Length: 320
Length: 320
Image 1 (cartoon, rainbow over the protein chains, first blue to last red):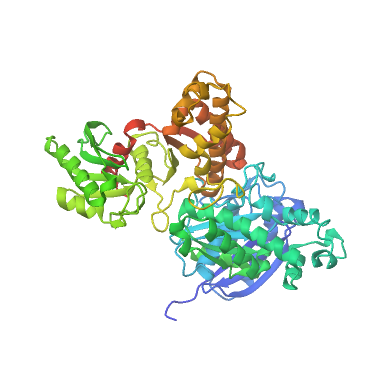
Image 2 (cartoon, rainbow over the protein chains, first blue to last red; image 1 turned 90 degrees about the horizontal axis):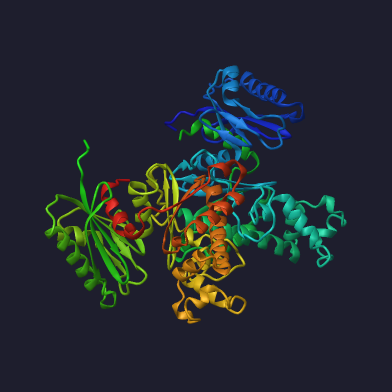
């Protein structure tokens, strides 16, 4: 109790919504709000929305705010605070978002890649609090990642490190949108996953996965697969275990390469639950070098729903 | 010339021979020697040989020697100077080699994994002098690796990082001796490679690869394949390009994960020359994320024949 509580604003910049939260240094969200991104209207409009949301939080709060953290998609330079070509935000090119926001809101502003922000968030507030080093994997439309090594974000030469979604598990495998082959994202990314399940319809017509959606493939989501698995549907369980294994194989390679053996998994598909985590851990332990085997640990992320906001706010409390 | 030249002893501990060199701080070997490892006679005998070689060099030199560096196979704790279960050195268990040698020879002694020592050697004396970060790959019986990040060896959580040979490129691929599947070592390691070439004999009977050895498969080595390729043999060239591509695919995954885009390749198979390096670089560039593409650089190691001795001696000149 001796340490006084501090406050920061976390901004989770997405293609559809921008989420804002006033977060304290214990990871509790004191107040939150969201706005349409209005991405189609171009960067000026999006930036206007960001400013609006932040100012709204500042005005409605009586706390002394220490700074602003923004988690954004795309290539980020944390030093310069720039955001470059974020997917789902058309027309951006390279924008000095940190400088713009800090000038307007008169608060120190930190910009970080959203997957890295999630990793820092888990380290500061979540499942990584007691870990020195871990690999963070976020499963969603894409497969993102962040590497924490000795309590610091491992950024690589230019800040682009952590793209675990583009680790290939099969050099003759499925095509990935990135232009490569066999990337783990091409197996676990939502759309790839859904497409693969649809292709298996003919030999699994009686599965709950398909009856839950009245055979209307457009309604198929990871959530449907998770629901079917919860009800014991064998096909759904098989899908989850298969993708868990594939992720585990990729993570075994990461562990062999970097000697980092703890993994935290978050994002939508992690709603697949225990079956997913168990299959990732089993596969990883099965494929990793013997000397690392007993150290393998696969944990669910803790920040869940508000991971974006909390991860972004944690940038203010974290200095690398 | 203002910096005074220093001297160190480098010891390259192998299963057959132990090589010793007196190396100066500019990477020049002033004197060198070698002894049988006598590995079959157990660790006490091997250690006796190590002491003998070092003392011999000390006695025959008039230089002030700054310390001893030992590159050894197996699991090494650099802090404790221990060598654990080195393959090809039976009966070792865990031995405090650093302490034993430093006590006997009255010189500070550094012990490091041989692949890591090679990486440090290339950083201090070789192809990595001007690079901040690079991945070192050594091709031989096994495929070893070392990661240099911002002029420091990246050791991971326990000092085991850099096992690029056990990055899998095909989760349904060939079995590796480590117990995993599709490891790059299971494609590029000398024995795996030779076995694969022998299997392709039936459809390539007329290749120089086989006529150079009078169809006696026991004589088949990477050197034979290199010779055949130099003479334009298409089958030999195909083999080299295929394994170069496979290594390049693995390295693209490493680059995406760690944002390290320079690679130095050394060891026996790197004698495959330009064709190997070109195919590694082409494959790596082809599969890496677009934002990293132009930075990809694949270089041959410079320390070549005396890499083991120079790499080991560099441990004395390098403080992490």
